[in-house]
Length: 385
Length: 249
Image (cartoon, rainbow over all chains, first blue to last red; front, side, top):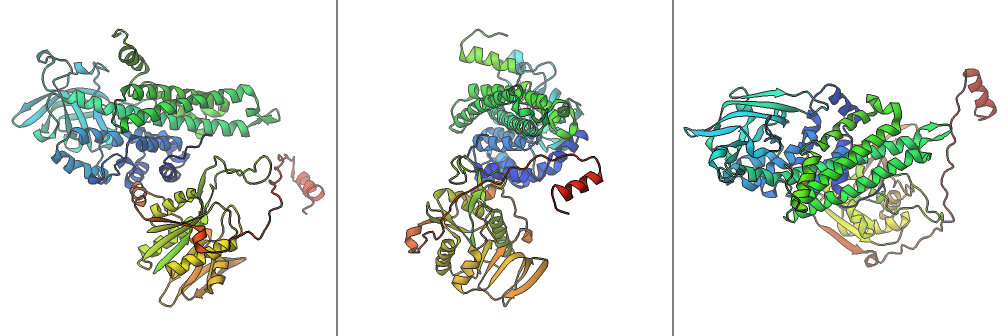
C-alpha cells in the first residue's frame, strides 16, 4: 500500500479520532437512517472542519490540500464525509464575499464549532445544472428580502444552523447576461423553518440527509445579502471547485477503504486449500482498481495545489472528481466481487460504502456534465447543449 | 516542576514487521513510523500533571535522525512545551540512551523523568532503570497510577501477581505501563500550535558521551509461521490430540 508521509500528523490525528467510531457505529446510523451526531460533534470540537477558516477568525488557516486529506481520512476510516463536508467549504463563500460584519458575526462561531453552515441551496426541480433559469425569487420589500420558490436536493438542512441561498433578484428578461441578476443570502434556518420555509426530507438510496425546500414569502433581513446584489451566481461558482476537489478526496478515501478490505479478505479467505487472493482472477482486478485510485489521486493533489496557489483549477477539480468517483466505484465493485455473497451482508459494511460511493458519479455534478465542460472549455469543441 | 519525557520513534504498532531479504535488519523502508506507545502514555501523564497544576514545563526528548522530529511534533501537539532532538544516525543501545538522558537531566534539571517502560521495537526495558541508576535517583517502574504529593510520589506498579504501591522521593524516574492512562488524540488547532513551539536540535557529538555499541548482533530471524488449525470432531479427539500430539496435558 502506498505510503504518503505528507501531512502524516493530520492523517494520524483524524484516524485516531475516527477509530473511536468503528464500523458498527456507522452501520447502526445507516440502519436507523440517523445523522452521525456524536461523530460530527467530535470532529467539530477538535477543530477539523475549521481547517480552512483563517486564524484571525479562530480557524487553522490551512489550504484545500489539508482539508481534502481530512475528508479522505474520514472516508478511509469507514465513515462518510457527506455528513459534514458542507461545513468545510460553505464558509468559503462567506469568507470570500461576505462583509466584515458578516465575517465577524459568523466565522468565529463556525470556527469554534458552535455554528453549522452545512447547506447551500442552488438546485431547483425544473432547473438542474441550468442554474441561470432558477425560478426562486427574492424581492426587496420594506427593508427585507421576500423569498418565493422551491429547491431540491438540499443537503444537511436538518442539521445546520445556516444555509446559503441563491435566488433571482432581477428577472431573467431584464438582465443583459443570464448569469447576472442572481444573489446569495444567509438564511438562519431556525428562524426560517415554519416561517415561510418548509423542509420535506427525501428518502434515498443512501443515508444522506437531503431535502426539498419550499419558500412561501420567507423574509430575510436585508443585511443577510452576501456581497453585491446580482453577483450571486459568480460567487457560487467560486465555491464549486473546492467542493468538487473535496469530494474527489472522499472518493479516494473510499477507494483505499475498498482496496484494504478486498486485500485483507483475499488474503484470509481460504477456498480449495489456498487463499482466494492467490488466483489472478481475484488479485488482478484489485491491483487494477488500486492503480486507478493512485492515478486519480495525482489529479486530486494537482487540483489542491492549484487551488492553494490561487490559480484557476476548474478543469483539474472537475477531472479529479470524475477520475476519483470512477476509481472508487470500480474499487467498490471489485471489493464486492472479492467478498462474494458476504459483500451483501450488512455486517461487512461493503454494501453500505458501495451505495455511498456510487453517489459521486451523480453529485455534486454528473459525469456527463464534466465531459461537456472538458469538451467545450478545454478542447474548444462546440457546446453540446 | 519540570518534567522530561523521552520519546522514541518506532515502527507503528499496526505494521507487520518484516526482515530485509538478506536478514540483516528489520525492514523499515516505506514503513509507517510512530511514537512508541508507552512513550505516548508518558507524554499524556506529564500533560495531566501539568493540567492538574503539579507540573510547570514539559520537555520532550528524542534521540535519532532528523525524522524523529515528527514524533517530537506529536508530543508538542499533545501538549508538551518544548522539544529537544539529539541527532544521530546511529542505533543506540539502552546504556548509551541512558547516558545521553543523564546529560539532558543535567541541563534541564527536571524533578521528574517519565519514560515508557520499553520501546516496542527493541523491547529492552532498560533505559529508564539505567538512567535512574546513573543519576542515583529513585525509580518507579511499570507505573499504573502516579500521584505527586508534597514529599514525593506515590506510584502503583504492575508486578507479577498483582499491584505494588511504593513511595519515592523526587527527583525520580517513573516508567509507564499500559494502564496508566489513555493518551489523548491531537486536535487540529493543537497540531498548528505545535508547529510554532521550540524544537532544538543538538548533535550527539556535543555531549561527549561514549555511545559505542557493546553488543554485536549475530543474526535476526522471523518467528516461525503459524500453521493452520484443524477441526476436531469431539472432545475426546481434542483431548487425544492435546495429550499425544501437542503433549501439553
